[in-house]
Image 1 (cartoon, rainbow, N blue to C red):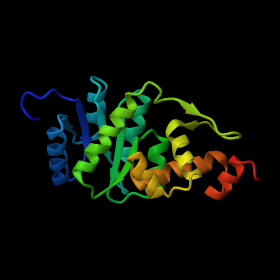
Image 2 (image 1 turned 60 degrees about the horizontal axis):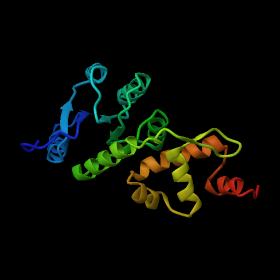
Image 3 (image 1 turned 180 degrees about the vertical axis):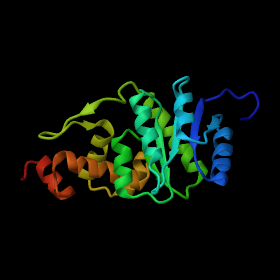
Image 4 (image 1 turned 180 degrees about the horizontal axis):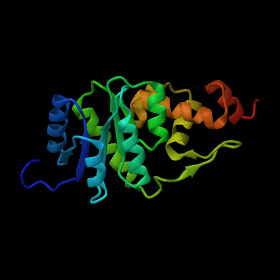
Length: 202
Protein backbone atom coordinates (compact mmCIF):
# COMPACT_ATOMS: atom_id res chain seq x y z
CA UNK A 1 0.00 0.00 0.00
CA UNK A 2 1.38 3.46 -0.88
CA UNK A 3 3.06 5.26 1.99
CA UNK A 4 1.04 7.71 4.11
CA UNK A 5 -2.20 6.41 2.59
CA UNK A 6 -5.12 5.72 4.89
CA UNK A 7 -6.24 2.12 4.57
CA UNK A 8 -9.68 1.50 3.06
CA UNK A 9 -9.86 -1.80 4.92
CA UNK A 10 -8.77 -5.41 4.65
CA UNK A 11 -9.74 -7.70 1.78
CA UNK A 12 -9.59 -11.42 2.60
CA UNK A 13 -8.65 -13.57 -0.41
CA UNK A 14 -8.60 -17.28 -1.25
CA UNK A 15 -7.22 -17.93 -4.74
CA UNK A 16 -5.25 -21.02 -5.74
CA UNK A 17 -3.48 -19.29 -8.65
CA UNK A 18 -0.30 -17.57 -7.46
CA UNK A 19 -0.13 -15.19 -10.44
CA UNK A 20 -3.75 -14.17 -9.96
CA UNK A 21 -3.17 -13.55 -6.23
CA UNK A 22 -0.11 -11.40 -6.93
CA UNK A 23 -1.84 -9.25 -9.58
CA UNK A 24 -4.94 -8.85 -7.44
CA UNK A 25 -2.93 -7.94 -4.34
CA UNK A 26 -0.97 -5.31 -6.25
CA UNK A 27 -4.12 -3.75 -7.76
CA UNK A 28 -5.89 -3.64 -4.38
CA UNK A 29 -2.88 -2.21 -2.56
CA UNK A 30 -2.62 0.55 -5.16
CA UNK A 31 -6.21 1.47 -4.21
CA UNK A 32 -5.29 1.59 -0.50
CA UNK A 33 -6.71 -1.81 0.49
CA UNK A 34 -4.80 -4.21 2.69
CA UNK A 35 -4.80 -7.74 1.28
CA UNK A 36 -4.65 -10.88 3.41
CA UNK A 37 -4.40 -14.16 1.49
CA UNK A 38 -5.38 -17.46 3.09
CA UNK A 39 -4.33 -20.99 2.17
CA UNK A 40 -7.66 -22.52 3.17
CA UNK A 41 -11.19 -21.71 4.28
CA UNK A 42 -10.65 -22.69 7.92
CA UNK A 43 -7.93 -20.06 8.35
CA UNK A 44 -10.09 -17.38 6.74
CA UNK A 45 -13.13 -18.25 8.87
CA UNK A 46 -11.05 -18.16 12.03
CA UNK A 47 -9.66 -14.71 11.20
CA UNK A 48 -13.07 -13.37 10.10
CA UNK A 49 -14.44 -14.17 13.56
CA UNK A 50 -11.75 -11.99 15.12
CA UNK A 51 -11.98 -8.94 12.87
CA UNK A 52 -14.25 -7.65 10.15
CA UNK A 53 -12.85 -7.51 6.61
CA UNK A 54 -14.05 -4.81 4.22
CA UNK A 55 -14.65 -7.51 1.58
CA UNK A 56 -14.03 -11.22 0.98
CA UNK A 57 -12.97 -12.76 -2.34
CA UNK A 58 -13.44 -16.54 -2.55
CA UNK A 59 -12.52 -18.94 -5.31
CA UNK A 60 -14.75 -21.96 -5.98
CA UNK A 61 -13.78 -24.87 -8.23
CA UNK A 62 -16.08 -27.33 -10.01
CA UNK A 63 -14.28 -30.28 -8.40
CA UNK A 64 -14.24 -28.73 -4.93
CA UNK A 65 -17.12 -26.64 -3.63
CA UNK A 66 -15.32 -25.66 -0.43
CA UNK A 67 -15.51 -22.00 -1.48
CA UNK A 68 -19.29 -22.19 -1.34
CA UNK A 69 -19.05 -23.87 2.07
CA UNK A 70 -16.92 -20.98 3.32
CA UNK A 71 -19.45 -18.49 1.92
CA UNK A 72 -22.32 -20.20 3.70
CA UNK A 73 -20.38 -20.40 6.98
CA UNK A 74 -19.46 -16.71 6.80
CA UNK A 75 -23.16 -15.85 6.45
CA UNK A 76 -24.06 -18.19 9.31
CA UNK A 77 -21.42 -16.39 11.39
CA UNK A 78 -23.16 -13.09 10.50
CA UNK A 79 -20.18 -11.72 8.58
CA UNK A 80 -21.51 -8.42 7.23
CA UNK A 81 -18.82 -7.90 4.57
CA UNK A 82 -19.70 -8.30 0.88
CA UNK A 83 -18.45 -11.62 -0.52
CA UNK A 84 -17.44 -12.04 -4.17
CA UNK A 85 -17.01 -15.51 -5.67
CA UNK A 86 -14.59 -16.31 -8.51
CA UNK A 87 -14.30 -19.45 -10.62
CA UNK A 88 -12.40 -20.61 -13.71
CA UNK A 89 -15.09 -23.16 -14.56
CA UNK A 90 -18.28 -21.92 -12.96
CA UNK A 91 -21.74 -22.88 -14.17
CA UNK A 92 -25.05 -21.06 -13.98
CA UNK A 93 -26.12 -23.52 -11.27
CA UNK A 94 -23.01 -22.66 -9.25
CA UNK A 95 -23.67 -18.94 -9.69
CA UNK A 96 -27.29 -19.36 -8.56
CA UNK A 97 -26.13 -21.32 -5.49
CA UNK A 98 -23.58 -18.61 -4.65
CA UNK A 99 -26.05 -15.74 -5.02
CA UNK A 100 -28.74 -17.55 -3.02
CA UNK A 101 -26.16 -18.25 -0.32
CA UNK A 102 -25.36 -14.56 0.03
CA UNK A 103 -22.64 -13.76 -2.51
CA UNK A 104 -22.61 -10.21 -3.86
CA UNK A 105 -21.17 -11.20 -7.24
CA UNK A 106 -19.97 -14.27 -9.15
CA UNK A 107 -17.03 -13.55 -11.45
CA UNK A 108 -15.60 -15.87 -14.07
CA UNK A 109 -11.85 -16.21 -14.59
CA UNK A 110 -9.74 -14.98 -16.19
CA UNK A 111 -10.50 -11.46 -15.06
CA UNK A 112 -8.81 -8.08 -15.15
CA UNK A 113 -7.56 -7.02 -11.72
CA UNK A 114 -8.85 -3.45 -12.13
CA UNK A 115 -12.35 -4.83 -12.88
CA UNK A 116 -12.28 -6.78 -9.61
CA UNK A 117 -11.19 -3.67 -7.71
CA UNK A 118 -14.09 -1.72 -9.23
CA UNK A 119 -16.54 -4.45 -8.20
CA UNK A 120 -15.09 -4.55 -4.69
CA UNK A 121 -15.52 -0.76 -4.45
CA UNK A 122 -19.13 -1.09 -5.65
CA UNK A 123 -19.86 -3.92 -3.21
CA UNK A 124 -18.45 -2.02 -0.23
CA UNK A 125 -20.36 1.14 -1.20
CA UNK A 126 -23.64 -0.77 -1.48
CA UNK A 127 -23.19 -2.58 1.82
CA UNK A 128 -22.58 0.79 3.49
CA UNK A 129 -26.08 1.95 2.52
CA UNK A 130 -28.56 1.80 5.43
CA UNK A 131 -31.24 0.05 3.35
CA UNK A 132 -28.96 -2.60 1.80
CA UNK A 133 -30.84 -5.40 3.57
CA UNK A 134 -34.29 -4.25 2.58
CA UNK A 135 -36.75 -6.79 1.17
CA UNK A 136 -39.05 -6.19 -1.76
CA UNK A 137 -42.25 -8.03 -2.60
CA UNK A 138 -43.60 -9.46 -5.81
CA UNK A 139 -47.28 -10.34 -5.52
CA UNK A 140 -47.86 -14.05 -5.03
CA UNK A 141 -44.28 -15.14 -4.49
CA UNK A 142 -41.45 -15.17 -1.98
CA UNK A 143 -39.94 -11.80 -1.03
CA UNK A 144 -37.37 -10.39 -3.43
CA UNK A 145 -34.19 -8.83 -2.17
CA UNK A 146 -33.43 -5.27 -3.20
CA UNK A 147 -30.96 -6.47 -5.82
CA UNK A 148 -33.44 -8.98 -7.24
CA UNK A 149 -36.03 -6.22 -7.46
CA UNK A 150 -33.54 -4.03 -9.32
CA UNK A 151 -32.74 -6.83 -11.79
CA UNK A 152 -36.46 -7.43 -12.27
CA UNK A 153 -37.05 -3.74 -13.03
CA UNK A 154 -34.33 -3.81 -15.68
CA UNK A 155 -35.75 -7.03 -17.18
CA UNK A 156 -39.16 -5.39 -17.36
CA UNK A 157 -37.54 -2.46 -19.17
CA UNK A 158 -36.29 -4.88 -21.82
CA UNK A 159 -32.58 -4.90 -20.95
CA UNK A 160 -30.45 -7.96 -21.70
CA UNK A 161 -28.35 -9.75 -19.09
CA UNK A 162 -25.23 -8.02 -20.42
CA UNK A 163 -26.96 -4.64 -20.37
CA UNK A 164 -28.09 -5.17 -16.78
CA UNK A 165 -24.60 -6.35 -15.81
CA UNK A 166 -23.02 -3.17 -17.19
CA UNK A 167 -25.59 -0.96 -15.49
CA UNK A 168 -25.31 -2.68 -12.11
CA UNK A 169 -21.55 -3.23 -12.35
CA UNK A 170 -21.94 -7.00 -12.00
CA UNK A 171 -20.89 -9.97 -14.09
CA UNK A 172 -23.34 -11.35 -16.65
CA UNK A 173 -23.19 -14.70 -14.83
CA UNK A 174 -24.29 -13.01 -11.60
CA UNK A 175 -27.25 -11.41 -13.37
CA UNK A 176 -28.17 -14.84 -14.75
CA UNK A 177 -28.12 -16.11 -11.18
CA UNK A 178 -30.43 -13.36 -9.97
CA UNK A 179 -32.78 -13.90 -12.92
CA UNK A 180 -32.97 -17.64 -12.24
CA UNK A 181 -33.73 -16.94 -8.58
CA UNK A 182 -36.51 -14.49 -9.47
CA UNK A 183 -38.10 -16.98 -11.89
CA UNK A 184 -37.99 -19.70 -9.25
CA UNK A 185 -39.57 -17.49 -6.60
CA UNK A 186 -42.32 -16.45 -9.00
CA UNK A 187 -42.76 -20.03 -10.31
CA UNK A 188 -42.46 -18.59 -13.83
CA UNK A 189 -41.27 -20.58 -16.86
CA UNK A 190 -39.33 -17.70 -18.39
CA UNK A 191 -39.02 -13.91 -18.33
CA UNK A 192 -42.02 -13.45 -20.68
CA UNK A 193 -44.19 -15.56 -18.35
CA UNK A 194 -42.88 -13.56 -15.39
CA UNK A 195 -43.71 -10.19 -16.99
CA UNK A 196 -47.22 -11.39 -17.90
CA UNK A 197 -47.82 -12.20 -14.25
CA UNK A 198 -46.47 -8.82 -13.13
CA UNK A 199 -48.69 -6.89 -15.51
CA UNK A 200 -51.74 -9.04 -14.86
CA UNK A 201 -51.94 -10.57 -18.34
CA UNK A 202 -51.97 -14.19 -17.17
